[in-house]
Image 1 (cartoon, rainbow, N blue to C red):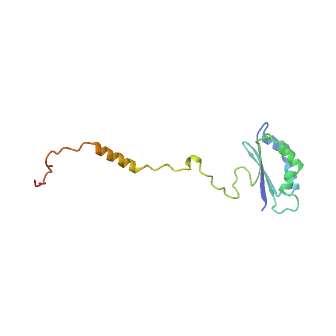
Image 2 (cartoon, rainbow, N blue to C red; image 1 turned 180 degrees about the horizontal axis):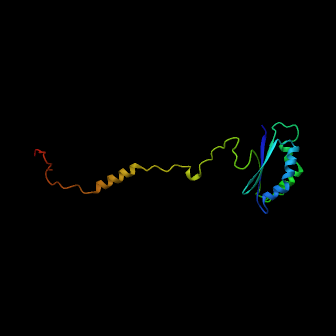
Image 3 (tube, helix red, strand yellow; image 1 turned 45 degrees about the vertical axis):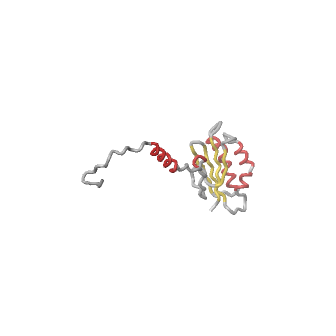
Length: 152
């Protein structure tokens, strides 16, 4: 199995599709000259992705030689948005899955600390203070409960 590389080009001053039409044939020919086993163009609403597969152990060229080719450098310099419109990375492009699962991101700063637990002792002190300040009931004689007799 070969090693996949992706070249993503986004729209800018002109469309990435017109860049593909201008430089695509030369990029594919150069990739094949440097030993590419497979290739694919993927068109997206935001631009295009060129996916190239080079053998892992190569005797002629390979990805690094392809990337250093003058024709490839010239094509990548001519992308529609030269500042933010070019991404080159290993793996297949677009929405394909990663070869290695991503590690989970750390929690945002707002969720980093737990909320403080309510202090129950404050509530008990407040209730005790309320009970202590209320006047005690006045003795109104013996309590009368139906069916119960108390000795006096």
